[in-house]
Length: 187
Image (cartoon, rainbow, N blue to C red):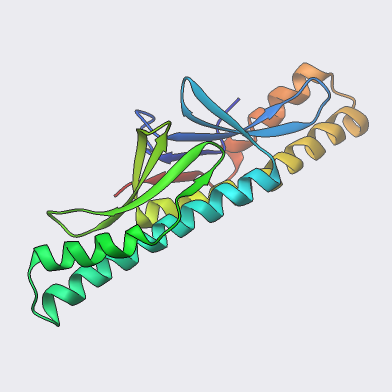
């Protein structure tokens, strides 16, 4: 099945693959492949929790970058003081987790740009800059609606047009060729 979304890398080298997959009963479910060994099924509830957690981590990372910039420019303090202040703020935050993934915001030491790390069992499995993380979260929220539309299209092809199941699945799987691509690159 063609992916609905390939987040983070339009070349397909790496990234988080979001797709609508058919079940044996003509319904479609959303899967999020973070790695070949780690694939999540996202119900609307799980998709909402995942997206909310990711957006929260992105906001925290962006806020940390703003605090760092303000401390070092407006207040004229050094890097060490800014880092201490940001670390103190982070120490008061609860961990952000959804669907077995921990989302941790950060700020690039060299460029001072915010980013989000994705961790599974304490191991980093991905990273996105904040704009890419926000787009990814939106795609995750949209995917259950697209899966419902895939199921509807499959049903109509079968009942109204009379095509058999394998053909209906193939036609639905090809719909991405006729839609605007949902691709996020981490620029």
